[in-house]
Length: 383
Image (cartoon, rainbow, N blue to C red; front, side):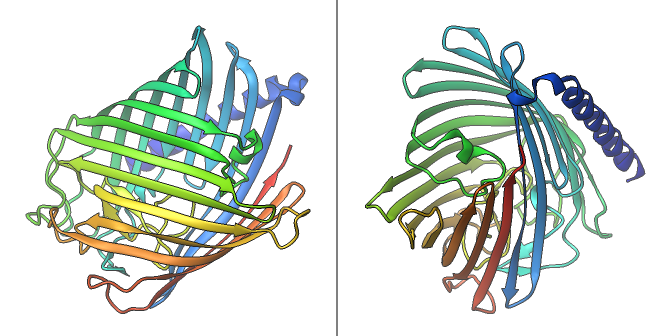
């Protein structure tokens, strides 16, 4: 564990130095930079109180390296540096990033079963990853992309008797397609906008494989849930869309489908909570479900109390199906999941304030219903 902490600390120092040097050297071109920040917390408060918070900062410099943008990002336990969209040829762009996350990767330190937290089954997870990406914009609104990520995982701090995964290298190639026809202003996709307002439609699909250098069954051995193979496959599809239905009203529809083979809790998708980093299911704790075979859709209605003001109130409903909802290793067992939430999205100049409160629909696999949760967040465009 001490070695792990030393490695992570070294990474943090290196990235911090890079941030300082880069920002200092760019002082003469401050007008080419914009920065934003945000903080928030996602909490379940019935039938038990659990929660997790985050704080993040982002700075993006336009045309900083080889006509590519430089993105510097910090989020709670994550440091990220990336050179984005370097033009290589007509319609061809390269992005290269490096990211490190310490201790809380994948929220594996919190273990939930049937909607309730189970002590003794959480552990720390950290990684460093190189993120090369090649994008070909072969037609208007259409992009093909190839990702060739290389990741190193580190694990530690588990209870006695709980077998950790092997520390491992992972090669994570992905082939993806994106259709993007969204008219939202670029400012909607800054870190300060925790829930960007979508106007238009975007659809994506990808197929990928994770190839690990070392592996073994881990966790509760012989339950069949965490016994990955050398090659772990994933087929993923997503949709994000939104449109106005009048001067005061608009609607957003989001959908995600994922199907995986030979996976474990490291690679499975996170479901539950009401924050921007999960598949949202109101009422449930953040990442209460971890599934590789799922279909989740979210529909939200937004209303402006005043036509000439940017404040929004609304209601969202999210639900679908996930596999192994009881987390027993029954990977061909599916269960329904869903919830409803009331929310506010309030904006005053550079500031945004968000609040959500949600209730999870009762299902046969959830224990101790009802389940209620809340989310609160604030963002600011700093410069």
